[in-house]
Amino acid sequence: MNDLSLHIIDIIQNSLSAGAFFIRLTVDENIKEDRLKIIIEDNGKGMTQEQVAKLSDPFFTSRTTRRVGMGIPLFKQSANQGGGDLKVESTVGEGTVVTAWFQHSNIDRPPLGDVANAFLLMLSANPNHHFVLKYIYNENEYLFDSEEVKEILGDIPFNDASIIRILTDMIRENLIDLRK
Amino acid sequence: MNKIKSLDDLRKMKQNLEHEMNIREKSNEPESLVQIRVAMATCGIASGARTVMNTLVEKIEKDKIPAVVTQGGCMGYCYAEPTIEVKVPGKDPVVFGNVDSQRAIDILEKYVVNGELLEGIIPTNYQTINEKK
Image 1: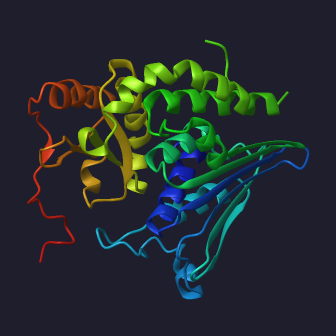
Image 2 (image 1 turned 90 degrees about the vertical axis):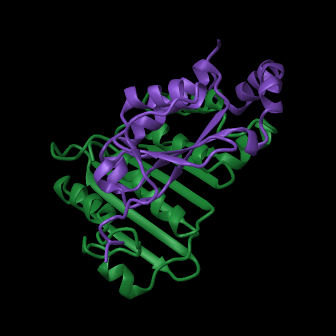
């Protein structure tokens, strides 16, 4: 995984496999506290405490197509090398919250990558799911709620190629503004 | 085109784009669209599935190809990632392995648009290592 946005795609894919139809991605960059936090919340089927405990074991997977599951272990490794860690909280029947945090200035912290693109690809590939992006940069905040946007777009689906480009640009512009 | 930043901008853009969209809308019954599923599990992502997905979306917009891109999980072809499954209406789905940006464009131009078969198709009777008894 070259950057953190790829981990985000990977964890959202897990949420989708768990039957989630609501997914909230929070990216929280706090330069003053030298901290970067990524939170992915879903309303999927959740996991038992036993399953959660086994997550950091790469040879644990709920999948049947292959015997290894590297998603969480790789994300945890990235967090650890970037001066942070990863935790998973889950309740059966309610959903799962994956939180990864990093030391923002750590030289071994992988770059964030294109979060706007990662988020939009997930939304466009699953146009009937409810996706929320909350991006915090110090005290500034940007919120993108797919339900609000869906209301405006009406008949035009999220998987329309032009819409994907327009919405990605829209999120990118707002994220640039957060840094001003 | 002006930059779109707020939901209001989006509302205005929608009105401008609407009649252009209507043409596409008519062919938008899911059965008449080509469905392209990009495998987006850890193995796929690590080997470049996101780049492939972006290339597909850009090409579809540029050439106005009646197709939608969705994502799937791991199909067990980790050795051949990135893989994409292409379902042309009325035909059986075909899985292509080792797809990069160039191959993604070839698949759209040659297989989807012209109906030519290409190399690198993973046969449906292929068994993954876990299925082999």
